[in-house]
Image: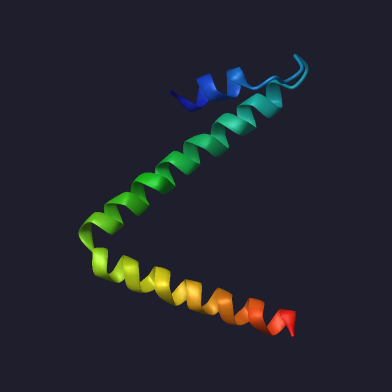
Length: 68
């Protein structure tokens, strides 16, 4: 399904053609970023896992400090 088709399926009023174009642009950029992430993970799976663990650790530390 293309970003344009997804944007068309959304129930937007007819006066929001500009919003449809914006949604399509965001979805297109998200698809490009997803493909870049998949390529990176395929090329460097260990680095990807370590980065995810490090990011999770940092988020957990920040949340635990905010809860105190």
